[in-house]
Length: 114
Length: 112
Image (cartoon, rainbow over all chains, first blue to last red; front, top):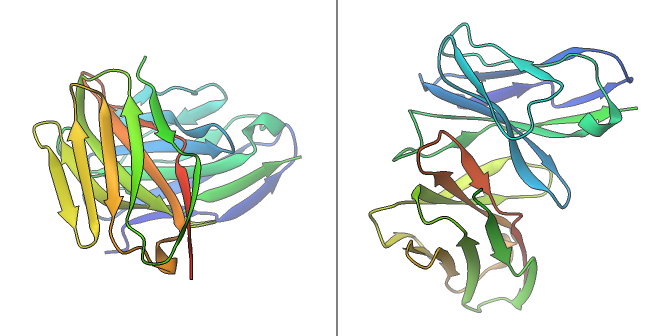
């Protein structure tokens, strides 16, 4: 198993540009989520999905869109990048809701918006 | 709103020392608590998962305890090694939600 994979590893955008961060998992996990990690702020939940076709907002959803058309993929779209979105983005997945299941994280995407 | 606090923010110890990392949470209605390790520039690696009905979990030199009533968890590392140097993150799964709430981590340095 490759586990949770994220692409790209690094990205530089200009203000106003759009892009999609890719996340895929090969463990047949139902639950997937996106976090951003900022110095002094810890990890904060952006969006999550409990299964294909179902998504919901986390703590900091503004400026981001998600969709879940397949179990394997959960892309995160930045609609119009802003410097405040400079961060490290992590995707995670688990078998189901968090009651008993461990969360597995991808290696992260380091995004800089200038 | 669930808040997770980790103290201290940074810790430096000599090799071989036993140490304890602390995690506290404000709402005891959690489903589970998970400890992660993060190396610089890397993703998160799960260390231990404690379900709400459990009191502790062990893996090798690591032992994590959970006291839901007091809103506390500890991660005990025995006989620390320089390879244990990393940031350790605690996270709780909020009861009644589908969300994991993280602390800001404790940066551990083990000196040879």
